[in-house]
Length: 233
Image: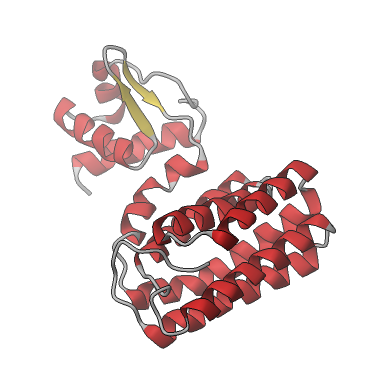
């Protein structure tokens, strides 16, 4: 283990034990170096690596602080890796995303208020008449983000958002069955909205599973090359 690794492990341990709380400024370098038994150079490298992972953040003119340690920040490094996956890797992620989004949908149906349902209806209404692929992708992202946020579980919503991100680079709307794909995607969204409106967690989970399974089928069938266009679902 290098000195930088030792410094990083020591800082993580201090955060995990609560010795350094979210939002707290790190002690002065000499104090940390003495405690961790490393040089200033190694400590600074460790701080940079933990900042890249979302654990620490530098504030110009103020110093280095423990981040808020929110799920979205913690998943930043993972997001960068997911965003370069090949189609085969993306399809493997569907095995992870499917049960997670089904759980998020079930939680949303059990907990969501009328405002969340109204927002989903409004987004889907715009999706149904949208002809621009880029805008359709943004609306689709908004729909799924709204649904997952309604679950009330920030970590779950943040993880699903990371898993969804790479799919936006594999477009299936240019396929021969584009109209069928769009219709099926819209119907899948309507099923999710109906389950939310009736507060039926089982129906919501089933709708999410069916919706994502159909998207996976199309991706496997057409095997699109990565581009900047949107993928359904």
